[in-house]
Length: 443
Image (cartoon, rainbow, N blue to C red):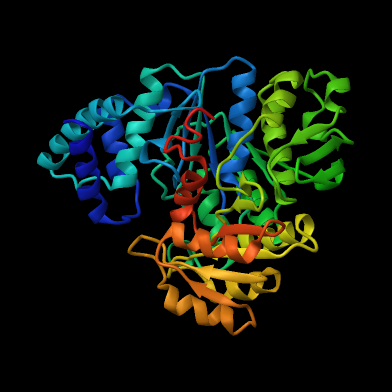
């Protein structure tokens, strides 16, 4: 099949929805030769921060000279963004060839009485086959929303299991308490592996530690008190490692380099913990400190407090759940004190949008509300009155261009425009400013 036919195939399979379980994906991978076993793989689960942590890790591994595959979901700019090799997106031809091979195997599975794998299972198989065929030194594999039943949970023994911050999200699938959600996500922990976690609330930390004990896995949780913030502004954050984790004491690293400030270009206090988690992962892999410093400093992760313009400043952030909205509010209050912040905002109807309004409204000077262009998009006519009820002036827009024009009129030269609420419509604003549909494809 060609790329258009491949897209149509994926669209057709997407109608299967989400089907928990690993039977289909494991059978598919078995028939493909188990490509998941061909590379050293880092596996990450969590609610917020997975992409940022692996963006830091990717850049540092590349700086150290490694060949790095990365599987990302969801994407912002293009469908093929989810399959990255050394920071480059898979080409349309490469995708069409690999999907043709995978589809042929799926056909034989169905003939043999298996149900069809879901679209995420198919995409995961394509990614793993791609990285194996290209002999990646390391593969960075992100869970979708889950853990134990996630299609990526097919590794016999990951190099390292990593956990980003875990909070409430996707409760209809993962459970209605932090303990249930953490237990589900901890399903990626394999026996006798190393587990590294971002700082967690005690309820989550307890679950991870207990499951590591059962699995005879070593557990390292980043301690924020080991790090000192020496500078934080719109140019980024400088942090210094003030202590050595006892679990790292046997590592052969240049201590002088360790104690030099790390420059974190991604904005937000939460990115400090994400960078610290990545640094701990990299040290565990014995990556040299010079490469870690270089990689952290040059990390770009689109859609996470990304500046796309000045005069006025325009930032794009994909915060889409309660914890992320709280992080965003903290960032706005930190970086934009005494500035008018005009939000362009849209949200999905299966998110806790009433809580979003409650959290973010105090930082809004005005808002332009838009309906994300997806069947899951919450109509702007529902969201707008909720924001208006908080005393925030609200305008409606039908298109991204119209929303940006209205926000510019409100912001003037000195205000800030912040596009947020969902990852699903951020690409339009990144492309409106850059004029480049492949913006970020090489970063």
